[in-house]
Length: 334
Length: 116
Image (cartoon, rainbow over all chains, first blue to last red):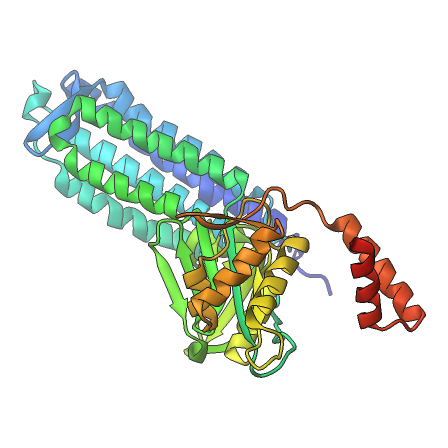
């Protein structure tokens, strides 16, 4: 008996088709359709049109062309990014969770950008002067839930994410007398590649705040506070101090916040495990994985994995995970 | 870095501490320039007296393994040279001693005599 060709096609080829259709073609069709509709409105629109709204009406203006082109351009760039990023697939030819997120985000972005651009132009149809444009807060608020719902549909059309989790290896306590006490301490930090990306992102954020400070100092306070908190958290979580002793496991980021402690009586078992930051946790830092694990994910490779009495698992990537696991197993008497 | 002490052992605690940290420097689980936990932190972590930890740190400083700086705590010394060749030599000597049934006491006596 022969199976229909569709079923025997290699999984990777099928996934790539889905990536192209859902992550690239559909988002581009949506933005192109929106661009076409907006182009039909051009004769009725003022020139220039309002493109940015402040608390008291429009405060930024640009040409119709750029409002129409921007969603197309951004969608094209992100769709290409999503396709390139997920093209290789997981180690077993499936789609990783992070790949699915990128493809679904491509859909989300195309719809939200198109709705906001088209919405902002539709309220200006028939106006002589863009200064009279009504507020578009409602359109912006509606755009995100609509885009989100469609992105969820896109997610559901993608195959189940491939699990690439490696099997944890239980750690044995360090051999020795029952009266021995151990202290383990180590520093774990992100690699050079991640550091460069973070530096570039923080620089961009800094420049954005600088531009805001010059162009619109009146509305600087809130963005500045949020920006500085984000920067401080990002820098702090690049490097962590790990301490294991009779009080349990303690992890502390460079500036002392965030931090976490797991007491010995909360520990069910201790193991070492191989971790893939992007594939399993979708990135770096203090992370939560869709499978319920959380932890400090700074590098690809060895990690300490602690299973707590409530069933939750906490991981810390570190180069000396084996030694850490043995020390913690000794403390927890597991 | 892993530090192990056993209060029930006959070896003084500060010697156990020093031996543990010395071993960490030799096997490179701490590297030059890395900061060791403060004496207060290590003492409360292991449930020993802070002066015991300070005594171990002072001994390690005298041996050139660490530097003690006011306000900055203990730092693994940059001058803590590579022990690779020495460790290889020691492995060879110990193997030879075992092969000839020379006791540890006799071997250390030999080394002590040679070092004078």
